Length: 415
Image 1: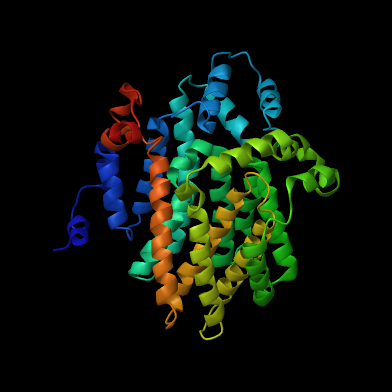
Image 2 (image 1 turned 180 degrees about the vertical axis):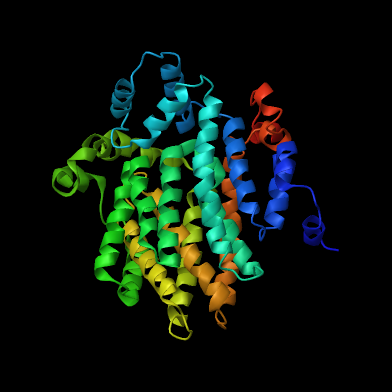
């Protein structure tokens, strides 16, 4: 009897198991990924992680979220308008969802862990659904390479990215809407993607790219050429150009926030930070991007040899267009986050390609390179996750956690 069959025959309710030991429940859910409850267990684990996470240092976004939350929770007379104006002075003026949620939670509790659990609830719902959107299209059993793709997809924006809740939650919400739109051909799901702007103002960018796609249609050859050119010769737009042209080409509503991200001090700090990164941190995304480029090239070559449905071609086209335009703007500080969104879209395309269309004799080398790049990328991301995953996350449960405080991160435990 293999391990998977052993867990499938267990009669214990998955949710009871989660209440006793969330980590073990998550492991069993991933082993039994075909069960309907599995995605909900991952969702619950995201909530539990949010409640038990460790704030590693005061430079983390989550540290600022805590400080602002404590400020308004300890001042019950603060109105929502006053709080929203405070957020606007910290470049949150265009983002409605975060101040609304944090203000609402502050009316009921002064414990920031509750707020972080709410973050986990929102982030985890879309995160788990995005993963299982792909799994549902894998057939009865995942192929080995499809498993590697799913793992990499999960690590592109892993659950510990709740630390940067605004952008990363918007990432999942946008992706959820776009994938379901292409997979199910229902326009209603585009409302989710549109709502991502309310979470983080910058998601106006992928929405504009999507509108361009709707107007231009499926032009895979043109988009693939754009993707190739900008991948190798990107960085066409620099911050200096945007500082001069921003009043013309960018909405006035985003003036304060955009000016901050393209200002000389921010650019200088960003460039110094990039220069000081260790090589395995700096190149992990580029290595993964190159491996995905090879696989997208393989999918491009093979696209006419199979009976491929329209949803695959449409998603393929949009992922190429989006990734090509994202690389075009990649010289702007913090814009690399949009490169990762393009990589998530590419993985979704390659996943469909692997499960339904792939029998190419040229696949061995690209697959081998992808395995290396994926392992590198996931290992580094896991190390980053150890900064905020606490001992309590792994070894306590929802019954015990309210009576403890997150004490030690895994990275400190290992040290």
